[in-house]
Image (cartoon, helix red, strand yellow):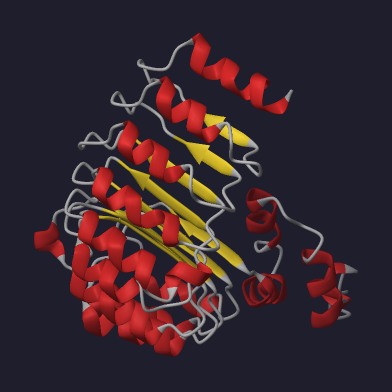
Length: 302
């Protein structure tokens, strides 16, 4: 009886380079996962060629990252300890965009100085970092900022973050800073940003639900030469027209969001009407602003 000869199909005859070219055209995540199931070659090449990964599943094994050594973007909803960060830095050294949104109990682990230093040093092109949740404190942020030489965008979200973190950030050259629910950030922290290196580099500053910011902090922001976008949303500190009119002195301001600042009135809006570069103004929830204040824009532009 003649032996059966297995004939390779067209898919199995493709080289790694050709498979990589095909996979580069596949952007949908589900489709890429399907491609990885074709055969061992496609599984290997799909992992090597993938640049972005978002892990949502709780308790995922970090060893899965061994398949993706060329990741540029990595996002997860659970990252527990410094050793996790150290493993990521060793396994995926090309990461540029890193995001963690973890709200598990701090007792399960904490992202401290050692882990964030390892991430910054092990991923030399790291430029965009987002750390949301109760896994991060001031010491970790200080270490990250001091070690990540390419850092340009930083997002932080938790009440453990305060002025010590902002003092370190002020010595950097980042262009985007987003702070959400950082209720220990005060006017002193804003003053550091306005007098440090960031006074020349920061283009976008987002402050949401940072309740200790007052008029005194906003007065310092006029020193920021490059600031083009400013968000002050639900910052329920002592912010009045004094701070609002101080903001109007920011020369390069193009976009301003003042959501739910109840202490502002038409005086602030009338002052903002003289901001020649202002293109976007959001006053939703500002109950003290009325029609006459808004009409100041039409009068100035006439």
